[in-house]
Length: 369
Image 1: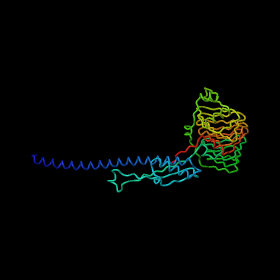
Image 2 (image 1 turned 90 degrees about the horizontal axis):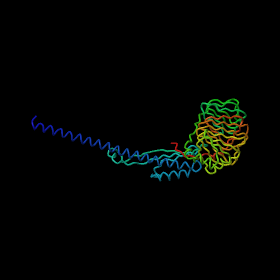
Image 3 (image 1 turned 45 degrees about the vertical axis):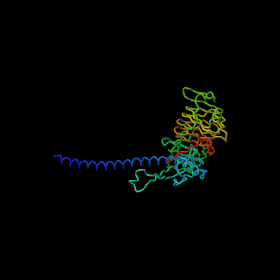
């Protein structure tokens, strides 16, 4: 190849390289524009979601009684997180005004992608919902047995004022003044003045484990030396009298005890919540509570055994993962009994009492969407 032909070929290849370089640069700029702007859009959308979550949580704290205040608080928190009230598209109140649901949209201006788009911006849209709930809220039942594997069984002459539900079947006799529902069957010996419904819908046991994180943890030394509890090392069990329970709840309305708890006595007259990581046992022939007070006894992972005898008690027994055994020939438990499995032995009477809602371990406002 002579010098002139080589120069001609080189000149042609050099022109091709220039074209390829120009195209590559354009493609690179396009991808850079997309990456940068998509990143900005994602960040703005997350910021908008965070602002909307905060707005819903703030509004839910006012529900169900104060809708106007709930709306006002939602807007305030939304604006405090860097957005305008005009970005809110809709505020709804659902579930008998127990839930607030908000949708919002916010324009995001393109930085580079406007070169390749027909418009200068896009709109990110998000939705959030929140409601205030508690251990007490999910159940309108005097007696609730959440197990789908085990029967709700009655033994003795049990009288229940209020509604009853089992996620399995109900066996043996009981007199119920409310409605009795079961996912499977209900014994013919169960009398319910409000009616019996077999094949009822499954009712989920709520998860309120977050309540534990908000409770005051009482350590072993404080329980023994300050409140006078006795302790069995081998069984990790604390034993407390009614007076000691009163003192504990007066100082700490919602407490967590790591271990098992046995309660003895006949005069609990405070309001509050006691949570244990293990079992609870109530002993004594006359376990009484003041009619104007109520206590939620919440066993997070264990069982609850209530040996009530002739006692009259106001409160909640809550064992979402365990069995609640109600023993005693008489006496009345006023409140709500909710367990994975509930058995009634000996004829204890149960009566629904909405007043025990004051003993809920704390009202938790949570996002539901």
